[in-house]
Structure formats: C-alpha cells, structure tokens
Length: 512
Image (cartoon, rainbow, N blue to C red):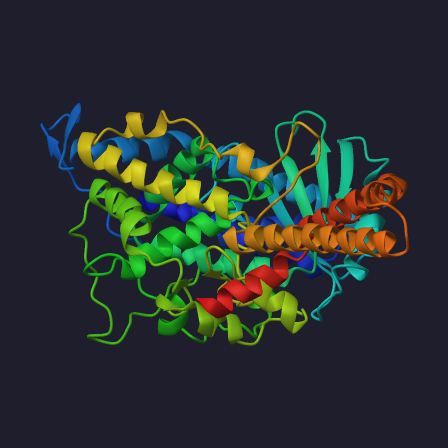
C-alpha cells in the first residue's frame, strides 16, 4: 500500500503540476521539462495511512490470514478489482500531455489540469478523464466566453490524426467531449475551460481519499451499488458520482462514533482556502499534524460496519426535510440556512435561481456553496431513492452478503402518476400541492363556464326565445369555446407546474 501511495503521489504531481507555463519552443526544452518531472516524481512521498489489518503465517509467505470479517474482505477485494490501475493512470497522463502540446500554440500560457475521479483517488479503469484548461486566473462566463474557447480547441484538434471525434456539449459548465484513435480509443476526455473549482475539489478529495484506507473501498462499493440501482445518473434525476462521494465523506465525518474523517477545510484552512491560486496546489505535500487533542484517529469500525452504517444513516437517520450536508463544516446544517447563504467562488446566479436549487436533498459544494444534488428535482424519483436505501440497509444488515447487495434491480417509479403516455404528452406534478391547484383551477373554470351558459339561457328566455331554442343556437360555439378554455387552463396549469419548478423548489424550501 505504501508503494501504491507513492506511485499515486507521483502521478498526481504530474496531473496537478504547473507545467502549464512550460515552454514548447524547442524539442530540447520539452525533453528537459519531461526529465525534470521524472526526477521530481522519483523522490515524492505521501504520508501513509494505516493499512488493512492482516497477519502473516509462515516464513515463506504463501498464505495470509485476514483479520477482517467476511463482508469487509469482500469490499476490500472488490475495490482492488475495479480501482484505477497505475498503468491506466499513466496512459491518461500521457494523453493529457499530448493534448497540452497541441493546445499550447493557441493558448501559450495555458495550463491543462487533470481533475475528477481520474486523479482524486476514486476512479476506476473505465472512468473518463476530465480536464480543465486554465487560460486566465479570472473567471470566464461559462455561457459565452467558455464556449468560444472550446470552439477554438475543437477547430485546433479537428485535423489531428489521433483525435477521432469531438462534440461540444452546452451545459451549465460546457464541455468538449473528445474521443481518440487507437491506442487511446478506450479513453474519453471531457474538457472544460476555466472551471477552477474542479481543480480545488480534486485537490480536496485527493487528501480525503488518502486520509484513511477505508474511504476509497467504501466509495467504490457505494458508487457501484448506486450505478446498478439506477441512482447514479444526473440525467435521470438522481445523484452524480461527485454527490455520492460527498455523501460518503459526510457520513464518515459525523455519522460514526467516533468520526473517521475530520473536516479538512476546518482543520487546515490555509491549505484548502477557497481563494487560492490553483497553480500552487500540490497533493504531494503532507498535511501538518493537527494540534494535540483536536483530532484522534479511530480505526475501530470495519469496512462492513461502515457500509451498513452508511446505508442506515441515509435510510433512517438523515432528515432530508430539515438537514443539509456540509463537508466543508463537517456536520449537518439547517437547509434553510444554507439556502440563504451567499454564493461563493464566482458562482453567479440571481436570488430566485439560487434558492430554487435546494430541493429534495441538499449537498453543499465545498467551495461554491451550491447544491451538487440540484439534478434531483423529481420527488417521486427521490422517494424511490430513499426506498432503495432502506431496502439495501435491510438486505445487507440481514445477510452480510455484498454480492446480494450488488445484484439488485434498478428503482422503478409509478409512471402513471408522472406522464400521460397514451396521448404522448408528459405532465409532471411536483407534489400534491400542484395537483390540487390544477384540480381546483379546472373545476373553477368549469363552474364559471356553466354559470355563464345558464345566465345566457335565462337571458334568451326573457327576450322571448324558448330555452331550448336559445340553448341549441348557442350550444355548439359555446361548448367549443368552453372546452377550449378548460383545455387551455389545463395546459397552462400543467405548463406552470413543470416550467416553474424553481418556484416550487423555493416555496418548498421556505416551508421546510
């Protein structure tokens, strides 16, 4: 484990190095830079955390007796089977260098940083590689300026032989998705422009992943379970992998007794400051020992106990209506407080949109203070997610069998309540409140229409027309008009219910 940690440190140093300003004027300068990086990597070390408990039997090492229980052993072996290998990490870093030297002529003073799971310790061999292109220390408008930058990169790489396909994806943080020809055809790159918070949280999570040996195996199993359960996809109103990692860290901070992890931002405020130059971040520097009495390392809980406790915490103990997750503070905080706080780190939104993101579950981003779980907006899906946690906890607590936990079926949502597939029109009711509003609006329209028809019939009778003849003369157009009004009311109410989900989220947060 020690050699593996040192290797990871060397790779991380390459991924977060300040090679952004390296000169590519001549081949000699490039060769010198690579030689210097290799020389530095050979001497890097990271502080090692306690290793899994094992004891050897016999002088010639042929067998080992594990002191872990069966469930913990299964978790540990599963993690080792899927975690990103040293070979894959080196291939990604080599590909990063190739892209960097292709982009340098366009942005000579740029920096290209590996971010996300490929470098924070929570990746596997199938993970995409996320890259952040830094061209300035100032914030870029992600809706306009970042798109222009990515389009320039797309044009630069379109005639490159080893690039097979590119696609610009316009999202909240736009990305350029790049696929490659062999031998890198199995790696996909998602490139963003000047999203510096990604570099900061990669730096933070890298230290969390190496703080305790149990963190990474626990995250590996939780991510795989969520993937098989169908709740690890932001496009389907469920968790991102980043949110799941923050949930695990939060549980290890305040869901166990004693805590497994501290709040690194509280314990080392200068190292993990929000306002810092990302070019100075270095994951190979050891953390200073905390003051005596501030933090006591505890390794009593096994991997199996922690996994069961994680499921139990989010199934039965966490109050989603009242509490919010804050890894930054290392504790649960009131969601009303977190929704009222000011955005940080250049996160610019108007007040309404900022408050509307705090919906089903609140997970504070450690640097921008935004909600990393804002993708979970469908309360029916969220109810299914909470049910999945309860069922998983009951299953694992009873059987202690990891394979039975992972051999699960995806969550199901009652589609009859979510959409009208027969007509091809999707109607979304965020809650019973919206449904009742739509029902009463429709009922009121029918009542007003009926009342108007009755008055006109009476008026026609008073004018000398028979009720029947007056009704028959006006029934067709008025019936058509009335039906159209009711249909419009339904359509407007339904449209309001779906498009004004931000208002609903704001009201719901206020009520909570």
